[in-house]
Length: 71
Image (cartoon, rainbow, N blue to C red):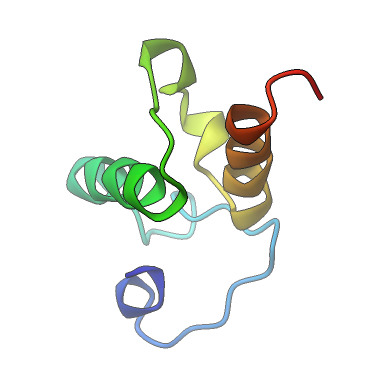
């Protein structure tokens, strides 16, 4: 899903997806759904902060926190 959205451009793990112009509100909704489905987690209202989805590392950190809330 994500590689299709960036027209083949390689992103660094900390590149801001939205400031680079690759993200919009529809993409953000699709990204949340993808993360929930791919990692079998539930993204709740408190997780819906753009900072949690702005980069690959930010998404990975969110996923880790959802999979292991005690960490």
